[in-house]
Length: 145
Image 1 (cartoon, rainbow, N blue to C red):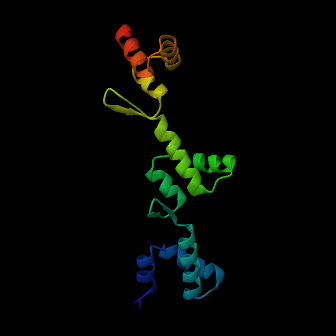
Image 2 (cartoon, rainbow, N blue to C red):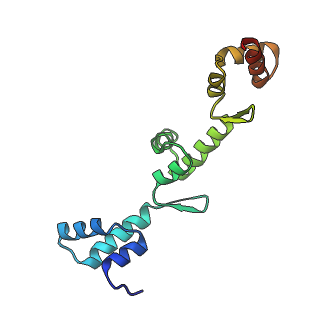
């Protein structure tokens, strides 16, 4: 492809034109060398997950509404690659989600807090009576309100 100017080329490849110019001047290199460097950087720092390309790993995590640092720590602790750690982390958090009274809650504890109940009391009651936590929560809500 031919470009009329460097800015047009940068826009096409989603490269910051001003950063490229600064890099060029600072390192006293040609437009082509600077562009090649930036292109390689952006090409290798993109993150592909579930057949979707994100600008970065952090952008991917933000799309799933999770903190990238949490996934990085998880990956380091489990000795996983980032992609595997992200899958595992998302799977774990999806299993923890709870649907109660037509609402989605991140955890059972957050659900109990929303209704002004202590999650440990509700769980203990459920275990003691051999019922689900949701049934125990309904009992506590009815008892308290």
